[in-house]
Image (tube, rainbow, N blue to C red; front, side, top):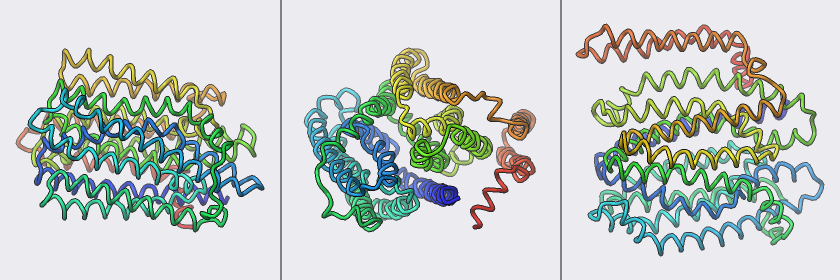
Length: 493
């Protein structure tokens, strides 16, 4: 019962944080488009992805921290927590600073091949700020991971909400004077706030975390490394997705398409985070229950996660597809084809990716990382090879399709593998209620296709209004759902 309440509170706070961040990014990017333009926004996107290569230094440690903190809390030896925290902070500091310096030294050589020479100096000017932000975020990630391990995600989410306000305010104040450099400085200030706030809450949350107990511990490093070196392959592969896709887009599609793709990615990622952040709170729960419960608990827990996730994922994905033209109009001021195409492709592939969340995070909680390593490495390879092939024939649009195909295939493999490990089938998870939801989705999409066929192009506003109102067909199915009634009851309590 206590775990159920914690999950509900953490998931609800995660949703609030993601919704707030999505609104913040909406106004932030609209402001940046008006002040610095889409080309400089494309440069900002490229530098973020380039500097994120420093995440190679992570060694999967922050992912392991959530699992080990949850397990250490069950043990009698509470002194291990302070040792774990300090060992992680020291390791992350050394690794991230070292790799960031290497990237900084080699940046000019690599960036000259992918950025127009007119914008190269701007890119090199903001790179140090981006790398500094990344290092501070990485070290601060130790403390936010500790909060997750304590199942205090709501504190972390509150910190992120305040940091978003700081980022937005800093950007508005600084871009008028420093232009793109002002955005980089604002991000650095945001990172510093997250670091100090998470540190304070980590120390306050338990007497075992106080700084006087912080010591280097060789055994803690070994435990983190043994878990993390496998997850590092996952991290390396994940880091190759975004930089590889954006570098190929810059080459085959140009900075304008890259800028519009960046905006579409932000929109879809906020939608994805809405559900994956709520789902991610199960990692410490699974880590704890895997040691104290039998396999039947994990089976029933996994089935329930999938049913609840589909209940939100399917309507929200449909809504995002229908709302894409409106988002383009409000955000960009026109029906931009680059943006709309990117959104449609990303929403469909992200829907599949979100549905692998229960399998993915449960595998992390149980420490079953082999399949995740294989899947992520394969996705990185498929993305690059397919991107080069499709880029030659379909230019920038081919690059976007390549990423969507790689993401969808990898997600399906994770689902099938975890179902097999729990000895459950697809039909054990989904019932008639989920089938009704799927039928309603097809009906809504069909009605909207008809509206675009039979209503003239001059009446686009009417098409969009009909599209949004057609979503009300979901309501009878959703509110009759048993899981929704239980969820509403839990939130009220």
